[in-house]
View 1 (cartoon, helix red, strand yellow):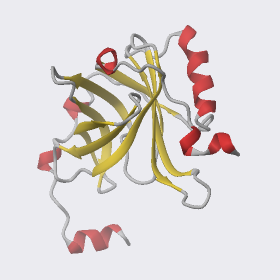
View 2 (cartoon, rainbow, N blue to C red):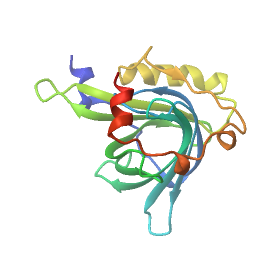
View 3 (tube, rainbow, N blue to C red):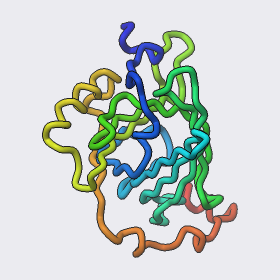
Length: 198
């Protein structure tokens, strides 16, 4: 039972956020509850000269259940006592997108090829397990993980108790450019919302 406690989840030792910076392609994801990016997910992490970490991300998502768009997100990171554990404040470039304040834990990475990310949004007060989590498998390569990295990543999925819960993330060149710009989507009024619930 102890290995399922959020507090016992192992993270990357001697994590170096400067080496982690740069572009990552999401090639696998475990979804949380609610709205979440679907595919074509690309994240860019930046560490400035003062050591402050920020990030941008883009991915395809459905807004109001039927508007297909590519969403642009922004985030700032707060350091904690563990170099591999951050608090992440995020928001959408459009007001239609979510805002939040989540954990961003780096479970493992070799910096040059793969990274395993984990976030628990809600911990059970009674037993310390996670009630709502999400996770990304990142690759530096749009084509996906190298064969030699797949076994390592699979083991890490077991370590965070999420084996078998991931979905593959595909990347289609040019797809975002062909979708409706998010700023042109009308905000539904009460009548529209009632219609959606019928």
